[in-house]
Image (tube, rainbow, N blue to C red; front, side, top):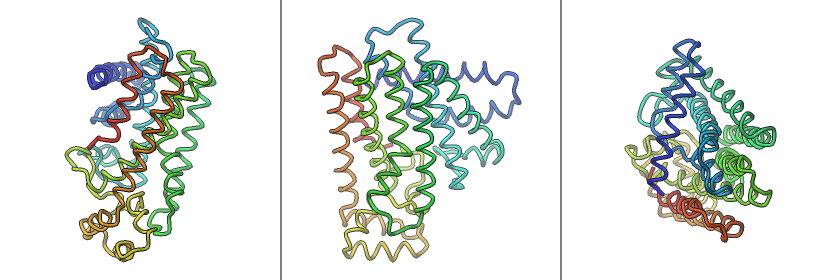
Amino acid sequence: MFQFARQEAERLDEVLRQDLVETTAAADPLLAESLTHALFAGGKRIRPLLVLLAMRLCRPGYQGQDTEDGHRLAIAFEYLHAATLIHDDVVDQAGERRGRAALWQSHGLAAAILAGDWLHARAMYLIGLWSGSDGLAVFCRATAAMVAGEFLQLRHRNDPAQSEARHLEIIECKTAGLIAAACEIGALFAGASPPARAALADYGRHIGLAFQLVDDILDYQGQAAATGKRPGTDWIEGQLTLPLIHVLRQGGEEGRQLTRLLTLERAAHLDEARVLIESGGGFQYARSLAEQYGTRARSALHQEFQATASAELPVLLGLVDFVLCRDR
């Protein structure tokens, strides 16, 4: 799985660079500089990889021009992902991204907003070009849901009454829906049947939920060198995620102490909050739910593709384990 991911990530980087050269050659140099800063700062390329895996699972033996066109389709999801990160950093006023200055800090607020707009527009163009109106409809629904999720998250920032159901709704909109769309559009590009498309969308949704719940845990327990994020960012910025929400909802001593800490200067009390969430079972609960979503992702594939002789099926199943066990 890791060899496939490395090889395809390298090829995707080549396609990204080629596309940027072709589309920004006549533009102001600041646009190309901004896009390069945003797109080549690391990153796992999971969303475009899922497009390719879904495509090949549904039509084994892809080669030649089909493969090249598939890569051009897949990079649309990296463009959209980069756009969301750029705009997230502006909204959150985050100074760093993946261990270096956020784009709005290094190139200015206007350049960041405009670069994000360009990435959104280019992503939509590529989706429409390579997957037609059906693919564009899937993509736009997921993008609209993502924005709705951002508004929900803004409304519930610093809200100690936020429920588990609301948090799961937010992460489904912001993360899982786009991963589901990547899987479904890859299947659509391959000419898959409606049941195969639905199964891959279901797989993507559940692996996306698992991915974000692990992210919630890593925000407290991860190492900055691995994650590229300052530890405790969610806590400091007032984003209540599942580990914290679970302990608050239990109503025990840990929950009462965390409620008190939320009213104080949070950065100074991160370590204390981490200990309370651990002792209150928040991390264990989030991990358990992530594993349940991982099981559902595997089941979605097994039910539809268990008779498929494809090298991609074990990779997609292995990706579930990677998501659950990752440290970055």
